[in-house]
Amino acid sequence: MPDDHIHELARKWLAGTATEEEINILMQWYGKEEMDIVRNEYNPRRRHLSTVWWMAAAVMIAAGIWALYPKKAEKKLVVYVPREQQNRIVLPDSSIVWLNADSKLQYNDGPQTREVTLNGEAFFDVKKAARPFIVKAGGSTTTVLGTRFNIKAYSGEPTAITVASGKIRVEDERKHITILTANKQITLKETTDSTAERTVNATVYHAWIQGGFEVNNETFESVANMLSRKYNVAFHFENDALKKCTFIASFDEHTPMDRILELLCKINNSTFRISLDQKEVYISGEGCQ
Image (cartoon, rainbow, N blue to C red; front, side):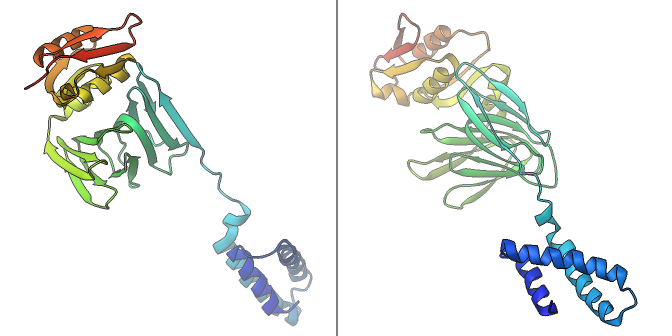
């Protein structure tokens, strides 16, 4: 078989464009030439062919052995934590993730791909490694090597990213890049396509992993969303102005929901009532002025 034809078949095989028939021809030639080299070691013409064979074989081994022995594809895993619950996950690369209520995390089952997708809230303790760790959430992409940070990215709510230690890189949908260090927070609002960066006490924003409930200048609407997920209830504001009232408050893990609501409503000149089935909460009153 002409050498040029063999070279062309090898090239097409490496490029992934060879037909099944062409691959069979190439493999048959490969096996035949290997036997002929052994039987005709001292034949000048065979030595020429052996050169062709070794060239083709070397190219195959160097550039295309992965095609014969493809790597095992990593599986996509999804973890969902329902309302009223939390969960702690150890990823394949040994990074640790705490998932808050009503949150979903998608990741690969192998340690090579350090990329996850989050819908909800999670606190990340990322194991330091040469390969970056990437979190996609709420229209943002957060990239780190090893650090601790909280991401809150529930559908329909602003995305808040808070750094507890180390340094992270955040890229929003407009490709705007922000570098955040410890006790820095960035909030991304999809509805207004705006961002806001500020200095905070990062401990407040991951107190939930210890069961605590802390709010720092949060609106009543935002607090209601947090309580809704924590206690699996639905909130109804009879006066929309109440949604904009803000709070600074801290409660431990043993504080019941009615006690939290009692104090919050007292601060903002409002009242609450809970349905008989304990699934609906109604907030009324004039609210903050």
